[in-house]
Image (tube, rainbow over all chains, first blue to last red; front, top):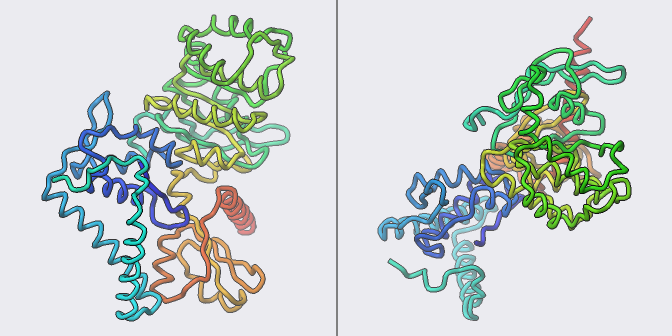
Length: 145
Length: 311
């Protein structure tokens, strides 16, 4: 599972992990029924505390994205297709908003922002054309639902 | 941190006066199911705290509870069966014993002794238990003692600088072993350490101990993401006034044409800076030892301040 933490950010770790794990589930990269690492394993893997992971799992469980079965572990739940499309855009919208704010902080004009967006889009397009290395990803899950 | 049930360890007003050192009063609760790291400079009272928990020393004052049992209440043996203790230094009096004979003796005291687990631990740690303890290298002896502390499946592990003498490979094995030990969720580790990376990889909570006193207990991730330093171009004279209200400000110093501001409330500080359109030229998170240094310094100032107030 690819979760990247930015140690230099003042953003709380639980929030960073939650956003990324939610995205992995909602996008279908983690399929329904996938067994997630235990709280301790995840903490070891990400070098953070079990307090942080417990909070992430609790929040995602409350949202219905994961379920914990006593004694067997925590699994990815079934994501309702409507929910999925809502969630899917939610993450993008908030990331865009952040990007715009970052631009405005350094006095970018609207024009400049548009240009940056176009550039980023082109760069991503160029990167995407060679086949994805797909580390630890379940193939073909993205268009589900 | 109170949704972790009964704390595995509870110290209330514990103090101990020695000829050269005064410990406490210490108030500390170690949560069950978590790894709590005690971090502090040399002779801050870490090993003394462990000895008090193991009833190897008696406090002058205060009360100690370990796994729900009152220390000094006489039922020491029953409690010890449930605890794995790795002291700071190995016991020298058993140097002539072969490791396997020591294990044979040791297991008599522990009904929970699991011979398969013991063998598995020796294998993982690459310990040759046919050696005499006195002939073992420091690292090998450490690994053997760690295996002994773990082989009876204790509920609580007290580890006093467990990694001293371990090579990097053995160190990684130890970290992994300890994580797996914690997997079931109802066990507890209290570990004293100097090693920043060890705290980062293992700990859930951090207790800072200095001069015999607890100067703070923090959840690790909150602590590490909360402390940041920001850099501003110019002299300290220009910035002192501007930054005096920076949330969590814990230090401001001239770093040669550039001013470094340290804060313990990074999120609030960033919002504060953004609202005033002050853009630092650089920012950095802080390492545990830097944070410890700042806290120790603050504590010193606070104590001097208190002394100053007295007539």
